[in-house]
Amino acid sequence: MPTLSGQAIAIGWLLLPFLAAFLSALLPVLARWLALLCCAATVFLAAAIALGALQLGAITGEALPGGALPGAIALLGPYGVSLRVDAFSAPFLLLNGLVGGAVLLDGWRQPPPGPFLPLLMVLHGGLNSAFVATDLISLYVTLEVVGVSAFLLILISRSERTLWVALRYLLIGNTVMTLYLIGTAVVYVQTGSFRLEAVAATTGGAALALLLVGLLTKSGLFLSGLWLPLTHAESPAVVSALLSGVVVTSGIAPLLRLNEAVPALHGVIPAIGLASAALGLLFALVDGEVKRMLAWSTLSQMGLVVLAPAVGGIYALGHGVAKAALFLGARRYPARDLAGWKSRPLPPGVWGPLWIASLSVAGLPPLLGFTAKYQLNKAISPPCGRR
Amino acid sequence: MDAFRLLELLILAALLTGYVGLLLRRNLFLKVLAMDVMGTSVVSLFVLVAARSGLRSPILSPTAGVREASASLAAWADPIPQAVILTAIVIGLSIQALLLVVITRLSRIDPCLDLRSFDDVGGP
Image 1: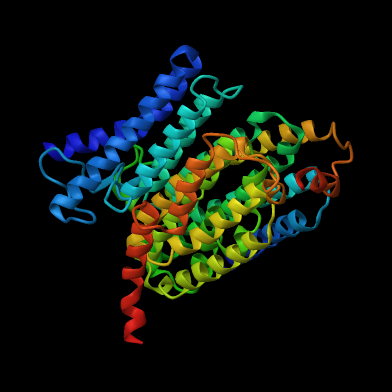
Image 2 (image 1 turned 135 degrees about the vertical axis):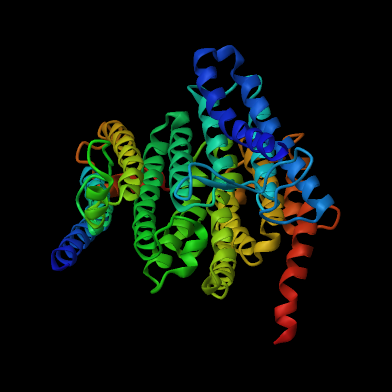
């Protein structure tokens, strides 16, 4: 049965990072290789989904023949965990694998102190699950796993500055997830289901509003995202790369899935995205501190990601890889304050990645950022033309 | 049904109390405590949701006849929200523990745990 084997592969791949994290705590010698294995597995799987979907033209929900991965997986009956490993999640998974691998290779010789690698693997696994989960409770659990492991990663440098930033991160994250949980309770009372599709059947805006507050704050959009830049800027460079590159998209991917399932959101989400893009841009222009400026730019780019759900994944991929490179280089930048850059030379080996990543975010033709922006432009122009 | 509505309002009041406390308190420990009040009220909300169809535990014992079971079918509690909220309780507890560890570390910087003294630490 090809479908069954595909399902087994998908579940094995989801469990791999958690098993690897446990194993690496027992055998620290293997930790780097296990982490690399997890990232490589995710990249391969994402590539397999993307190629399979391109060949067949299948987008969602269909089981692909020939031992390929199944679209939708429902475990433990109608109230159980429902996952969807589809073409929508492929760019997000690829992004997760690439950024995880980059962070890992950046510290290959000398990994950051403490339990960095096991935490990296747990974060990686949590993100993978968050990208493929399609029921509200699984999403809650995975987002909390992501939140807690990101919190512990921020604390890895053990400086006093990060203590308060990490505390704030988890406190806000947990509070909004509490609100999200109330939203799921309302959805369950009204529809008797925890599926994302059930949200469309709810009456009154309470459930939808509560769920949105949770997801928007997690993804750092618009007003609820104003708290994120400080967190990104104050964390150690490797953790900033993870937070700004991938962790923000753990809220974006479910948000786009929710947008697809609930027609009532089609007008709201693009408006929030546009407002977020403008707001982030303004803050980025006036901020003179390099890491904070990059974090504001993340806020603005995430606004663009939610504009068109169909190309959101590829846009998030282009942005995440470039932003992770920029943050990883941040340790070697001459000064944290941009005003000091004029008087000091850039160290050799920094300007190349800096140029390429910045130009990709800006959207220069041969780079991924251009492809993403071009597709976004194509995706949003028809409705504008009709008006 | 009136009791259900009353309990719902009480839970909502507890939730709002926690939320307002979280926003207004300047002491970090009290903030975490307020967050716990919110978490607990969400747990009770789920328990209340589970009890809206009845209070009997939904376990069919082989000794009781099927007829007897189906007679009292309407009075069974809904097991799904109860099962779901167990996960949330565990997550809430572990997050609480992590936050308290960080607060013990922060108390070395400022024993009063005042929010304002940390905003400077995190700032530029």
